[in-house]
Length: 350
Ligand SMILES: Cc1cc2nc3c(=O)[nH]c(=O)nc-3n(C[C@H](O)[C@H](O)[C@H](O)COP(=O)(O)O)c2cc1C
Image (cartoon, rainbow, N blue to C red; front, side):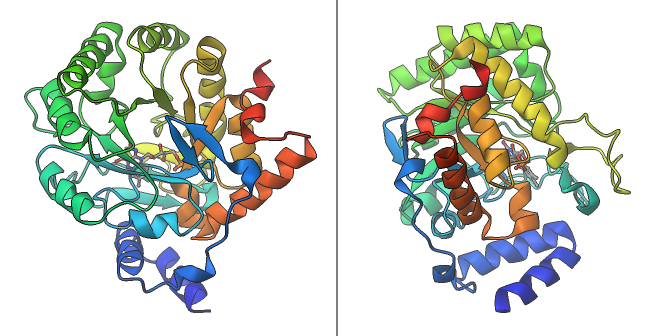
């Protein structure tokens, strides 16, 4: 009852304010989290990057930008959490309003532009609040940076020993020229530099690249070769899109920024299939974009994703969403005769 009242208030308020309140509720333990706790079935357990994920469903970057509530998120049935995007120095992000709820479309448009408390503050938070689950840290450059490459290296050095994986975000549409890093020579230079830094630090934390859905088949082919060459450990497919506006119904459909949620679902599935056909099981895929129930998670897994992430459906479905997906996914896997989640990865691409 308490949750229903809070939820309906949050859905009516300004989206960014609602998000702030949700973070405060989770941080101050105002929500009785024990009512959401359920143990995912063994069939959902999967090992990746040398870790055991008890559920393949994670919270995507952007929800817990400044690493405030990851331990509460683990209690909601999520198998992992990705915090960030974190920038080297604190920055406010773009002017408000900058987040729009497209309720009729089950979507969000955001142009936040990496508001961040900066890497030193986040480092202290994580250092003082040991993660009780698998924690990825998503890093990016400051808006006013004179060298994006140096910014990634600074964040990598700061966090590589503190996280279960580092996600290199080159795909937010809200930081000027960031997505230019999908170009062959630029991404090659960046990944080589990060790998060299990792070797210098004698570190082996998995490195994951987060990719845009707004890329061509030629980009996919070039990126795949570079990822294999540089021995990158994984990819997140995908970030938000600047396209897909034509079929939207909400009055916010023309707002600038990245679109997430249901209208991104098929686009990201297609990108997952295209990468999976090139990479097979050599580089695991984390699928994101419109995951909101067991069916949409299963489609991503059968398209080639080993894990999935969500953000937008947390806003629309509430804190039960991960548990709901876990239960539905278990049923779907069993119905199709799979003994484990791994067996279903890429099943639609054979
Ligand atoms: C409000 C909002 C903020 C986001 N911020 C980030 C971010 O800081 N870094 C990032 O890599 N992705 C960010 N994302 C993208 C999500 O991580 C995810 O890739 C995308 O929303 C697709 O998943 P979804 O459809 O489940 O939301 C953000 C998404 C939303 C809706």
